[in-house]
Amino acid sequence: MDQPPNERKKVRCFEDLFIWQKGIEFAADIYLITERKGLKTDFGLKNQMRDASVSIPTNIAEGFERRSRKEYLYFLNVSKASAGEIRSLLVVAHRVGYLETGEHNVLREKAKFLSGSITNHMKSISSSEP
Image (cartoon, rainbow, N blue to C red; front, top):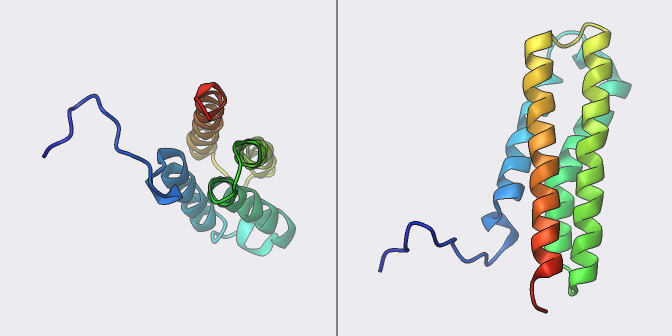
């Protein structure tokens, strides 16, 4: 039986979560960007950018697998903080010339979208019945 168009798919595992899927895509974008000349050899910034970007979907997954709503919300908060961290790191990469303005803007907007989506997910979890 087909699902009605306005009905969401049941989330059975963290891989079903839109925010996790977008987080994985974003982390892959960051990994590819950091393999380019400049960032490729700036190991401190490169590793920090990779760690922050991977932290977004990883903390979503870890929180989802926890046993309580309180723990899940904690890990979503960590994920959201990592989205802020990567935005800051993107500014540094742009200012030192590793990122062009256009690609910086695109990546910044993706990080802001993730942050907002995580916030919305947190609100949804907080307001749902136990």
